[in-house]
Length: 168
Image (cartoon, rainbow, N blue to C red):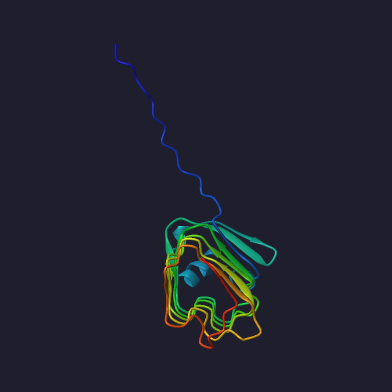
């Protein structure tokens, strides 16, 4: 006698995988967020505003486009693995940005963080940092980059040649 097996195919529940600090005054809907990231709004789930911060689930890999956060008040960005690339000027002139933990970023182009303040970059999967990755970060700032898999640095990490700590 042949046994019958029942299979239940359910939807995988989305989990929040992206958190960004102090941007809810400008990014206040999933539609606005989709435009900022240049992804379909259907790829954003669980969009939620918590005080001045936002969180959501991004359902497919994406890149941060050029100037996505230029002149933004953001204080932190934490992505659990869907973000793959940081393009030029992604975080230009973000003096309040103190922490970028981007677990899925594989490489960056140049001048991602031009004119930012003291901060920590956590890029555990990044293998290549582009030319002038930090742009012209001011000399009185402390920048920490944790990129343990990085094996390729651009010709200059910062335009002014100032770099305080390198881990990786």
